[in-house]
Length: 297
Image (cartoon, rainbow, N blue to C red; front, side, top):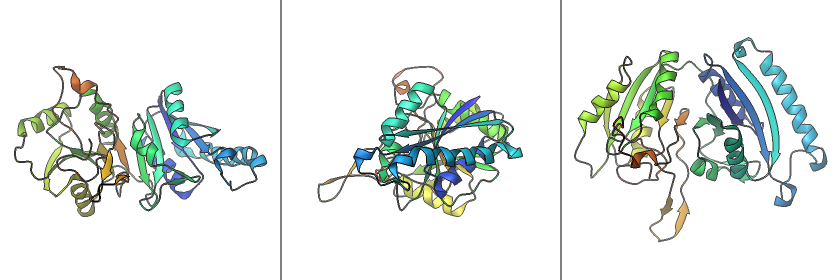
């Protein structure tokens, strides 16, 4: 059974994220924990409710939501539970992932804002060491027909990180596109590595698409704008770095939020140091702000 942590602040974004996650795993047994993380009183948080009754109100909201979910016929494979925890968002979620070993963390997102009960969720997107599903606020649940894996053939990734994707695509009966974005000054294409990836996904037959763009973000956005894609998959080889502006000042880059649900399969880079024989020489674009060749760094 998959263990899935869904972050909720009872907003439209988190509601849609839960719906998309349930749809994505509709054929898979899964336990969903709905976690509400709100700042402590000392952090200057002004809740929607009086602080003294906030916990009771959260419990009431969760009770109503869980009754609704459990009463829906489409959730026979799914179980639901909820928890409320005061504290900083990143630290609280990290602790939950460490203690319970979640397979996936789900969060709803908007491109124009990353406020989460008054907290910035940027650090969570940047630094969380877990598989992560980021769902745009305007995205509704729908059947998954086409999955796009954005790849960079210049860097390694262990095949274990693709196994869960292969399983999901097989269960959903979806098609797979390997999107390779050629960005300057890259000149050498490792076509033999594309063959290795294709062979790994057998009997799935991935289509291979090459796209030229100034940077990986631009290429991904351009492809999504021109094609019907239900799920974008990336492997964050490393986490985001700060973006140095022309003025020399440093500023934390905004996380890359695609226009479709984006599944990032976590990789801390440790396996890339090994010389394992079953390694596929590939790397996916993610979470690197406007740098040549890569979106992860």
